[in-house]
Each structure stands twice: as structure tokens, then as C-alpha cells.
Amino acid sequence: MKSVPVKIEHEGKWVPTTMGIAEDRFRIDVPLKQEVPYKSVVDLEEKKNQVIITAGVDGEAVYRIASVEKVLVILKKFIITQASAYRLNAFFMSPAIRGGVLVQNAQWEKGAIAVMKTGIWFVSQEKQVCIPLDEVTGIELTSREIQEKNLDVVKIDHLSENELVTSFVLCPLTTLQVLYNFLKEATHDTETREEIDPLTGQVAMLVYSGMDSSSIENMLKLSHKELEAIYEKLLGSGLAEVLYVRKEVQLTPKGVRYISESVKSPLD
Image (cartoon, rainbow, N blue to C red; front, top):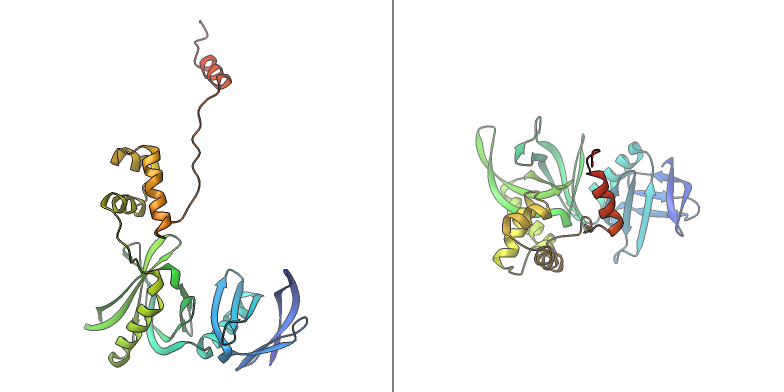
């Protein structure tokens, strides 16, 4: 077991310690003094230079670990390939399409796909890609031309940095339908199960296209209060989130005097 320096969150503070990484488990030294088999891990998340590992049947143990990229890459690979998750060997291309445009130099990677509680993980010799389940916008069985043949693939549409991205998974046909069904079930909570009125849908489409609030009000001839009410519908249904709060201001008498003085001609 090779020991490496890390930091672990303990009692609300980041504590420097060492971690032992073996082929079947990792060990956290003081202050925890615990060993965790990879097969007991039920979820894995990543945030910049840290990973969040959840272990135990009921997810009762959570470890927040920060370290250099090289250490985290090794740790993630062991976890993804051995954790308690739906997993199969497959080819994947992620990202394949970004913003409706084919990604240059995108290629099929031979590796594995693992579906955990909060994310879909792809891992190969060269790449580790995570698609958070709450960022998935669509799962579809489709076909794609590969080496001059139309082959069935699973298409995963998802958001990345507020941009629509598409990834593909290719595996034997006998397991492709099983994978599709499992992914649909895993992302079931992200699906829309309620109808919205046409105007609210129109506003949602304009927001998706990148239009700001003022432009939407002008295009649809809505008042500020009317648009705010529609936004509340989108927020309440979970179809939107608050990006920032816009302030509406009017000038005080002091401000009016300032503007009046500013626009006066020097000859006045």
C-alpha cells in the first residue's frame, strides 16, 4: 500500500494526513485511522481538487479528500472500477458534441461505464469523465455511423458549464438495451412530469436560447411583474434556478438634480 499526502475534512476543518492506496482499498491515517474497501463505495463525486466518497450500505460514511491531481486520478480509477455500482465495459465518446457542433478530435475510448448515485462515470486509460445525474437532459437509443457502419448507441445529452453537450456509449447489442433502461431509471427523477402553459413554455425556450429578461419582456410584451410570475412557475416546477437577482432602481431628488446639472450647456 503506497502512502501519499492528502487533506481530509474532519469536524469542519481540513486536516493534513496521509492516505494509503492499495488495489482493493484505501486507508486514511490520523485522525480517522480507517480502511475502506473500494467495493463498499456507493458514490463518488469530484469538485476541483477534491473528491467526495460515500461508503456503506446506507451511505453512512462520507469522506472529503483533497490532494494533487495525480493522486486523485489513481484513487478515482480504483473506485470507479470496483465500487458498488452498475458497471460494464464499453466504448464511449465524451464529449462528442458541444453546443450543436462536433468536438474536434473526439474519439472513441475503450474503458468502462459506472452508474453511481449522483453521476455517470466513464473511465479509460486516458480519461475520467463524470456526468452528474442532475445535469442529464436526455437519454436516447439511437444509431451512429462508426467505421462506415450504422451501429446502435446510447446518446446522453447533458449540461456542462451551462452548455448542452452530447456523449455516446457503444457496447454489445445484448447489453445496450439493459444499459439504456438502467440509465433511464437512474435519471428518472430529472424528468419533467408536469405540463406547463404555452406562455411559460415560450419563456423557458427564450431563456434556453440565452435571451435576458429585458429582451423577453420586450419580445412577448410582458410587464416586469408578469415575467416574474412566470419565473416563479419555472422555479417552483424545478425547471429553472436563480442565476442572480436583478435590481430595479429609480433616481432620488438628489439624483435628478445631478443629472439635470450634468446635461446643462455651459452657456445656460
